[in-house]
Image (cartoon, rainbow over all chains, first blue to last red; front, side):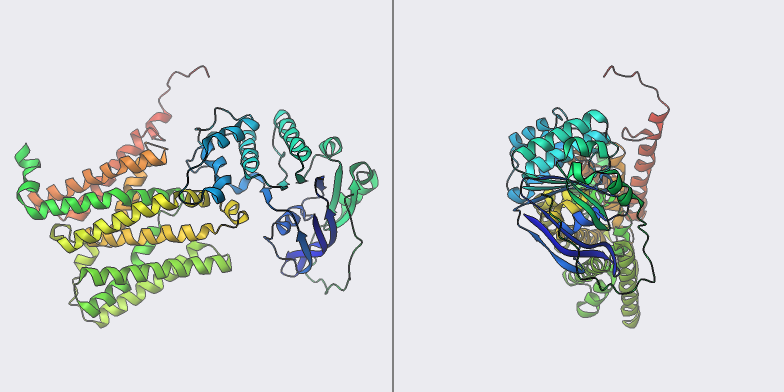
Length: 244
Length: 288
């Protein structure tokens, strides 16, 4: 289980996510929606321990957390093969001296329909193909908690559909999935649970109940600008929010 | 023909040793240069070669013209600059280039101060331009060790090192500190610059790393093939330099670098991996 208890994370004492109380049960598939600058990526990065909360605590009892960041974080131009990129998932098992099991790589590549791309350079992949490669890599990592940051932005419909089916398959196999999403129709269609986040949790729970006109209007109309003359916050805590 | 091109290396021991020194450097310097280029750090080598100076100067002040002591001094100074700038950039998040620029300039200033305080009897020209033709056995042993250490280390760390180049965050999320491999790589660069400093001098030592790598990048994209073929480029240009010195008494180092420069210019036009010519040649397209 993952639980955020009264978590505030930000930069230079200004909160980006503010008094977030949130828990996600094992085996759930959760979408996080919210405006740009609303703290969605910051939330994922704090779950990954990349950012240290200024207040509150994060408890993560999952064994292994996998993460797909937004597209632009990887140096595509480096001349390595798709196979090598995918095999980097095994770096912990392989270490410095063992060799990678080629069968595993082929299996991962065929799971995302990238057979035949194994020896192609990473730089020759299109955006959608690269996203497939990232899914193959996370497949090999075998995490029980997956965090994905806008995995379907700038990806064509067919690829999105295939990748989301893959996510649902992994979810059925017991993996817990938390995905930052922009396309609310996709959220309605595929995600049983939703968290609406605009600095604070606006609503959370079953998708049908969260994605009401009122919540959507509230979530996306909040002003995300930081007040440079803000006073010290004295708020104790916010309401608990369980996705279930 | 044999007499002109081959005999000098058979007849004169110093010519043979110089060529052997070049072959040893050629095996690993271009490989490191290739990664420097791929990491967009081509000019970093230049900075590091300046950072080596105070160590060499202290080595000279302590033990005179001893290759081993001067090398050790250079290695310590260079590594110190690498580790310090790596450490500062990591904790202040202000970019490694600025930290490196600051530390290498401090190092360079210290080096020049030490040299001038020690009087000017040090042969500055031989440090700046190297002395490939007077290479001795001690130096050859040093070069072989550096080559061996570089190749073995790179083979061992290749996987995490390359992953750190493409996706450093991925290693962090797997609780692996990719930065260590970057530092190890940079220390290998220091070692190879010292090897270069023994042969072609500190001023142009970077040339043996960057130029052959820049040339091979214009022909090939494959990293492994590039590492295997690039030594040939170095050996050919060193051969030209040595022959020019032997017959015309030209300084060796500039000829080597100019030969590499010429190859680079040719590659810029003709190279099959991005050469200018291919932008104007329309080849028939394939059907898939």
